[in-house]
Each structure stands twice: as C-alpha cells, then as structure tokens.
Image 1 (spheres, rainbow, N blue to C red):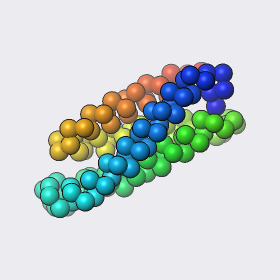
Image 2: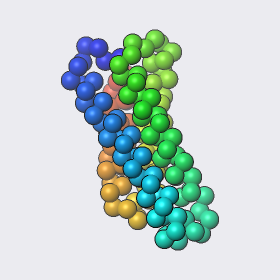
Image 3: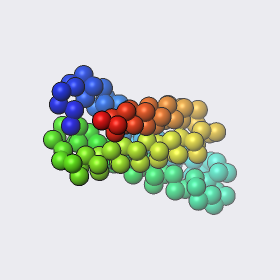
Length: 126
C-alpha cells in the first residue's frame, strides 16, 4: 500500500507488530490473573469481561493490517484497511482505558492507539 514510502512502511510494520504482540501478551494476564484477583472481573462487569475478547480482536486486526502493508490494495480493500485501522485503534484505546486503573503499562496502549488514529487520519485525507 505504501510502495513509495519504504521507511514509513517499516515504521508502520514495527508499530503494528508491537501492538499485535503486545495485545496477545496482555490477554494472558487479563485472563489468568485479573479474572481471579480483581473485583472488577468478579463483580460481573460486562465491560471488563468483554475487553478480553476485544483485545484478541484488535490483535487479529493488527495482523490483518500487517498483511495489507505489503499487498497492493484496490479501492475497496483500501477502504477496508482504513476502517480496520480506525476500529483497531479505537478498540485499543478502549481496552487500555478499561484496565488502566489496574495495570499501569496500559498507558502504552493508549498512546499507540492515539498514534494510530493520528497516522490513519493523515493517510485517509490523501
């Protein structure tokens, strides 16, 4: 998709890999430790329980976006790519905001989600 911008493509690849791997690593402590140890999960909070599934969905969307970086996309697939970046960035911000009070490293998720929204909004204007 970004054939003329090689450096930008590798920056996006690095960022998407960090987000995808980070979210997959975040899912493990959310499922194992948070579900047993924190009242946020045991109180039946649907928002907290659904954030685990949303984190997995966001990781899968980031893997899809990595594939799209190295494939020439048509007009329809470009729209699908841009929408998936918006959705995954918003979901990353959502998951990070839900768990920010328990895990302080969720600030990284917030900043990466905001950075993703900024970068794709600049790209969508073109």
